[in-house]
Amino acid sequence: MGSPLSRRLNKPAEELRKPEVRPIEAPPPPAPAAEKPAEEPQGYIPPPKRRTTPRVAELRRQLRPKLLAAPSEADEWRRDNPEHQKIIVDRLNLFLQRANLQLPKPEYDELREALLDDILGWGAIDPLVRDRSYSEIMVNGPNVIFAERKGKLIETEYVFDDEEHADWVAQKIVRRLMRSFDREHPMADARLPDGSRVHLVRRPSALQGITMTIRKFPEKVLTVQDLIRFGSFTQDVADFLQACIVARLNIVVAGGTGSGKTTLLNVLSSFIPDDERIVTIEDAAELQLTQRHVVRLETAPPVPGAKDGTGQLTIRDLVKGSLRMRPDRIVIGECRGGEALDMLQAMNTGHDGSLTTVHANSPRDAIARLETLTLMAGMDLPIGVVRRQIASAIQLIVQQARLKDGSRKIIQITEIQGMEGDSITMQDLFVYKTPDHKGPGPSHTGGGTLQPTGYRTKFGERLEQAGFKLSGKIFGGGMVSGSKS
Image 1: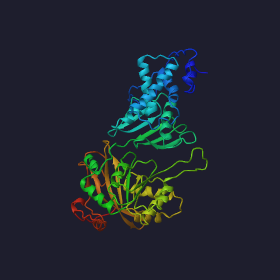
Image 2: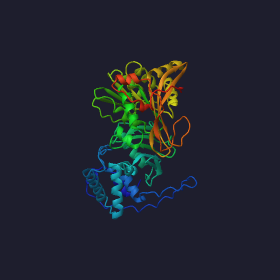
Image 3: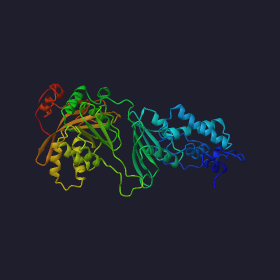
Image 4: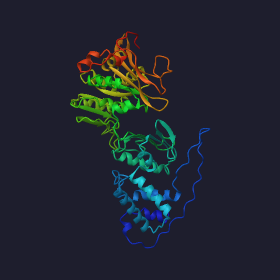
């Protein structure tokens, strides 16, 4: 049945304007539920949590939907907009007045800020979303929220009230993009208004409750000079990469999760001349190209309720469609499936100068990954044919990594030189080294630089035709003959 206050708050907003027949008594504060302490790794002490008091949490839960004329009414409103805040606070005061509920000032202030966070912001994680010093937010169920700052993960003091509270925020995130997040669609990709990428998973797959992973991006689009200043690479490397982009080499950016692949892809894309038509294809739009002639495409899920996939557009669908849009360049945010075959075919049939990213820990792993993704297209192709497609389509692999100190840097730039028998031959042009590092591969600790190996690119003539005559010192002093990888 619910309490008198609960029954009152569950009435439509129009009925609240009617005179009260009798005052409604406020419910006594419920006793806090005993929490079973979570088992933590030995030696780890989680930070104190900022939990909403039980009485305010219950009022917050009941009032969230009642302060809106429709669930989507405030989806485009902003937490820092005084006019939007006033609308919500005025409605809150009206509801409390109609319910004849008097709250002590500390409880009222707590309830007001909590509702503003839920309706205009992003609930419990709103302070983390608005704080630009955090680059990633990870919600592992309602009670455990981690965040990344300067490359380091920390457990935060913030928690959701319960699973329903986390779901309220998740629904607000996906609703803006006309996507579904429910039992039939337990996983969703979305983005926040500022472009931050969001990945959501719910029960039964997420055993601890709703899981959110939010990858934030700087308010200011990073430029090549920013990355040089951060030590991601040198000016010589930047000049080389610019020459490769303008000369229309096909480039793959490889790296692990959170290594900075998308940021680097965005910077590389900025070198594309303004007079070229660019089509970008992504799962969740993240790229922020500054050129005028850009077509941005994003995957679409099936129409809600459709059982046959009606309305769905995958990366592969968009890649095929983009070939009919007269692109000068195709930029694919990430290859993770059969679209790799369509991308290779596009690169081999006149759409050179294209860019994409793949998850891989080394250039050699990136080749193996592309082989696997190409075979996922469902075509029964011999592996030798696939490798020849890769060797002829891709000229450069740029390996990005997050180092042990949390910094993100290019650690290898490797050129694909062709085929020897059934193997793809590759040559490192630049490798990241630290003073104490030994061995042929790159270092994975901070304090080093991206150094030339002494081998010049075999595409030197192509770069010169594009107007770039690079000095031999960029590659370490000139031509060096040696073994290939």
